[in-house]
Image (cartoon, rainbow over all chains, first blue to last red; front, side, top):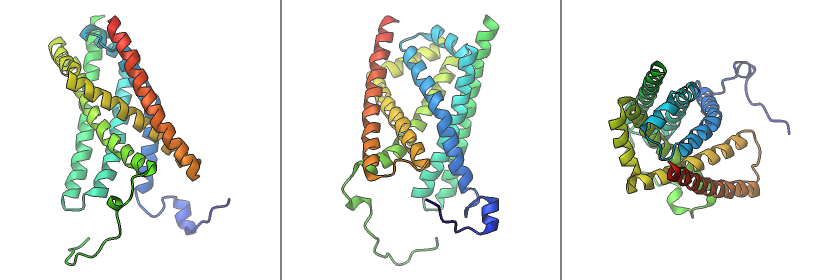
Length: 132
Length: 133
């Protein structure tokens, strides 16, 4: 089936659609979603494998380079995806003047959480690397 | 926007419709997304606890290992798999596939069944491993 194009030639060339940043938001939500599939499966599998393990075992696991890198990637992707999702939820339900503050707060909290999580992960990793 | 001086009648909204699999899974995907963001914050607290040392870590473990903690973890596991499977369903839709009503119901029930099975499987395997540790 051929799809009808109702865009102007310029609009088609620029390729952004009617909204300015709408496509970017939609597309990044998909990119992070696809990235979260393997990362999420890795994380769930690791959690199950670490069931009931003590501090030493867990820290040794997190400090293994593969796991450190994957955890950092998970934190970036997870909170990026969360920030994009939360933005839509706020835009849909908050219609007062608080909207802009809610949007700012959601994004700030997601970025801060990712930053703190990455720092903690690297802190554990450095400790393991220098100890061995 | 602007000020709304006159309250005009609104068209029927969600409260008047019978819940259906399609609508329930739609809102469930959003709710689980919000829940999983909360779980993301708990993950960060967990990592900070691990970085802070054995005492902080064991305190975190005690809270998660308590009955309310385990119950929340179970709910979080289900939310995780529901959002994961629902997300895959959305990605399939994004490729303009499986849009027939029959397929939508089939994929919807598949998401529900897969989430339940994966949650159960995760906990059975997890408890076996925890028993060995």
